[in-house]
Amino acid sequence: MDLYGLWFFGVEAYSGIGGGINVAYFVGTLEVTGRLGVGIGGWLLLIQMVLLLHILKAVALVILRKHLLLHLLRRLWASK
Image 1 (tube, rainbow, N blue to C red):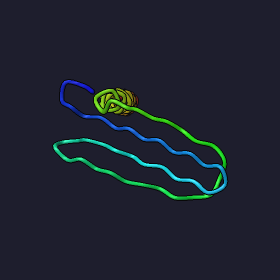
Image 2: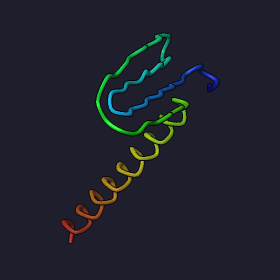
Image 3: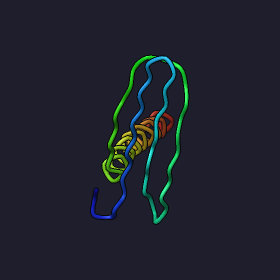
């Protein structure tokens, strides 16, 4: 759990027929969802939402910097 109390937890298991449950708390809302299916395997996931938001912010900044650099290069090229 982070300082804002945001979190996500999920677990699934399949051995033929199986299912799973996801529990998340974000912006004051508790969400519980489930899945049913057929397959083999499983997973367990615990994500702190702030970590996920930091990753998304970093990706957005990289995209923005690339876009701004391309825009500046185009303007420089056009001014010649």
